[in-house]
Length: 331
View 1 (cartoon, one colour):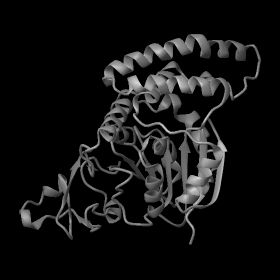
View 2 (view 1 turned 90 degrees about the vertical axis):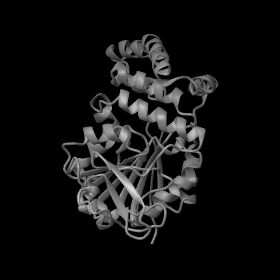
View 3 (view 1 turned 120 degrees about the vertical axis):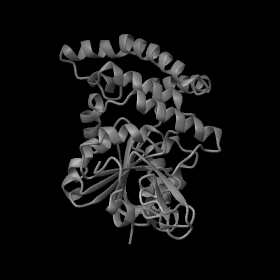
């Protein structure tokens, strides 16, 4: 972060009031307090104030919807508890940003739409010109901490369906593992498209539909989710630990033994990706799987159709423990 207190001038020029679309100022002469900008920014048009805490503009409050409240609270809890980006950082970066021309990002303004604790932002920041990390939960504070040494990053707390940016503010936008947890995934993606410049690109990651054994297991998981999504979050964390421990002993550990014997494991096997991760990542992912109230899954064709319906062209979709999809905003 460029500053722990003040708002960066470049960031301020991007921000727009979600009530009227107006621009913001750090000055508040009407209050007669030259230090007020340390706690707020003010819309020049409608006068609305947006609180600033720890250098982070806060455009969200408690949602009205019970589902949205649970989603916000569960991800805030998750990325505060599982806040270390290092165990999964390198592997996730290679998977989620595969086939991406990193050199082309050197001068580009980039948005991490749903950054969680800042894992992907931390990995991508060295490759981009400017990066804005956005999350609608208190996980944004953990992201700010993880990004504190990245001089080209800023953090925002905001909702993907009410983005506080001018249209066409970004050259590249990515959203990894977020959109499939939203009530209206298409509408959220359209909001993102409006914020990328003409000719700019968007990359997303979505859960895939599975068949066979994996499909059967996911069906069982969905039955359990009817209960787990209602559990207190600390209790769910403990339950997730027990589930992860069982999966590690029964599935992951045997995979590791087989792989150590020189056998190449099929990447379509259930949970095979956790062979390369420490146990805590498996625990984290079980909590993630059982906590969010909405979890959507897509076929390859459905992902392609989603990006086209959102207004993107030159769409490509490929599998990487789910679906990675790219698209370009047409002129």
